[in-house]
Length: 248
Image (cartoon, rainbow, N blue to C red; front, side, top):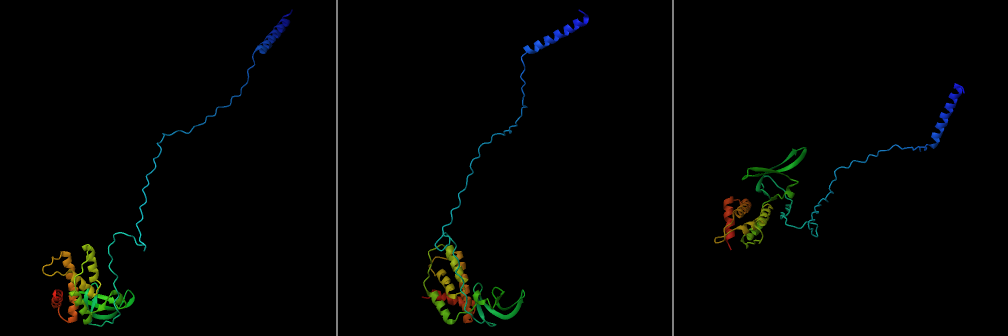
């Protein structure tokens, strides 16, 4: 056997050995692995305590309402609305009564221009207060401006002073407001009621400071009109009014 034949025989033997080895070997199963997908879970924060329900304040109860729709409760007494004076014609030199200032004198009536409006104004001077008040003639009636009471009307006022005092059994603060409203009403009969109710004769309890103030204010207002009506001074008029208070 030549060298070439020996070489060919050896190669064939090697191939046969390789084929035998491949057949005896266990075939490997090819597995297709899917790439792992990482799912990111949301990070958990610190666990918070459950919220407590908020306390709800109860709604305020509605104020009790009367049948007329007015809230019921303690209320300050309101002053009665001022009654308009009767329509009167004023002239220079007339003595008049303005409800909140008392007796004054018409100095003049003139037409003036104020803020682009032409108005007829009544100039009233109050000597004691050193004050001049200008009232439009169109507003004089609603403001309560009036002339002096007539002698017959003042006779009725003097009759009120002789009457018996009528004092309500209410708190003084409420009565004081009613007295002030009567004084500022400008009605001489209502002012006379204040003087009568707060006057103290000998042997009666003394007046308190506030009672004395209201009494003197009412007496001064009434005496000023009485003095203008009787054409005398206020001191003499005051003495006459006090004499009527003491007479029976």
